[in-house]
Length: 296
Image 1 (cartoon, rainbow, N blue to C red):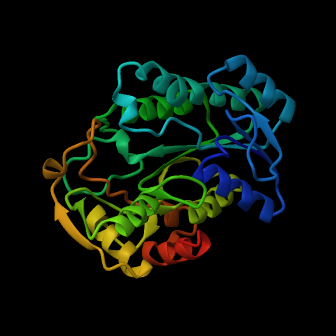
Image 2 (tube, rainbow, N blue to C red):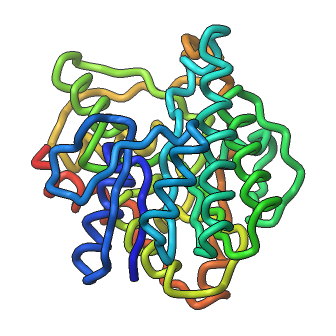
Image 3 (cartoon, rainbow, N blue to C red):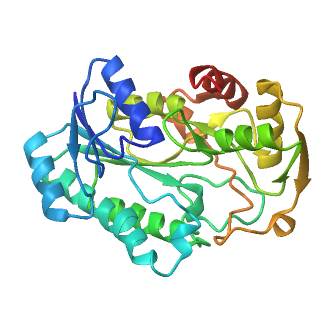
């Protein structure tokens, strides 16, 4: 199978490319950078350039597209000078990819986020929930991307994830380890609840999906139950052997963030099993493998 992957300079795109290659698929990667230091077959592409997207897809003629590329700087998205860019990438760029997929009649997986919901309550969000009310510019732009895919295509997967971490890029785990080295204690919020997603594990699931036709909306994080960022940090330090003290605080006490974060990022993943897909492993196991793989 020939698969086109966007955003290969990022955490998930990088892992998806490696998983495709490992399984013997033909993988073609893209990003906005001039090159990526990985030896991938690579095409520089600005997904906001519709003509370039259409031409690239017509030339490659993929059987499937996995589309994790996007603007992910959540706080920077709130700045007035960035808002148009955020929507151009996450909504407009995604529509361009979807229309190009439809033109060459291929499958598409779009990677979305828990931020499309309002983050209220304690009930886990179901993949087919439609009571959207995103709190941030980032969340609104990703919701527009979801709707663009659903309106344009029939053969699509929309996969929402949360709290992603992987070896190729910045993430919460790396940030906490760096902070934990410098300071005897750290303050971490304990009222935002969800589950981490190891991009190495997610990549396996996405490659499984492109071989199937169980289209629709899905949620995919690691297993192991719902936790807070405080819980996650405690386990990061425990596995890394840090003695740094972790102090739980509320989101209000922590302050700082420009963008509103969802308190409830619980994603129900049972639809994966219902449709024959293998869930991701426990998040503690994923963290242990990540720390070893990243040599952190």
